[in-house]
Image (cartoon, rainbow, N blue to C red):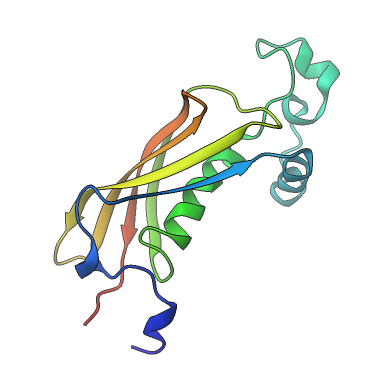
Length: 144
């Protein structure tokens, strides 16, 4: 294997129950940049006058922007560099607003030996509120 120092955890290093977290306070710039990159210009996210008339009473952050913090945990911490996303389920449970600090956490739920896959419980919270929950399946490199 070339450059093993660039990799995160190898499959053999993982244990059920291991977890990692990243956090980010969502800014107006984050929201606008995500909208531009994704092409999602839904006025629910960008037009306060429009959004004020909805059930949320104002603009909310794109759900997928919030969910992308799960990708940050997976790609940088657990399992980390070298892993490949194979699937992700998401349940959006509460809105996130500009200025909220989101904590995204991934916890090893299951190890699939022979396929070098790990199943992670994933969750995003703002304060004590769960805003997203789901499950990810990740292919992890082997040490051998």
